[in-house]
Length: 316
Image (tube, rainbow, N blue to C red):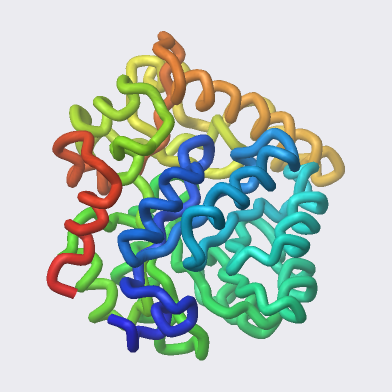
């Protein structure tokens, strides 16, 4: 697979990216992914302080010289965005994944430094816009993705982007076994971004209850909630999620009606929702909100990350 477009772009053995997962991705998971011949990224928001993020980057580089990246939320709901971008540019991480906003500033600052920029996209129009801005690749976020997902299945989205874009397309969503990796590559994807199945890894820092939920529940238990981050988010349909519902609440409806207040309301919704998710991820609580995607079906037990990775790249 070293001749694969994503493998060539990053200099990795397998075109697999361990997706950046809010609260979950950490240095230990990145190191294991790099040693397995793949790559990985961490959401910058996983670190409360700049010092903590710098320490994580140093830890990874102390263990490996292989390429890894970070994910940036680039819209106004992320007050840490500017500072995070400055640090990532200063330390020259290998790539940055942009989400939920325009990547223009990121691309302008990263290009001269040789930092690759991959952009999350959910449709062709946006993919063409970020390509014109100078993105190095697009990540096709399909409707099967865990967390923030797109409206269209990757089986339709990936071929459309491959046909019309001149940069690599990375497929994200619904990938849990080698056969899905092969399917996406056959559709023209340069690589795949995989998240949910890695939540149930030994290296993931979340609670045993969260990991066991991935073993216990199935794709039929995944629902789309508009209540937690200001954008549609896939979660496991626990009793608490059933209790609070998944439809937009008062703040979400107000945000859609009032453009002037939108920035501040979205920030408030995001902070409140992420606090609920954080409590659920690291401790047992009746207010259980566990983020996951339909590829939960491929989680049969908790395994070391390198074992999960081996199952994804088998036969490539």
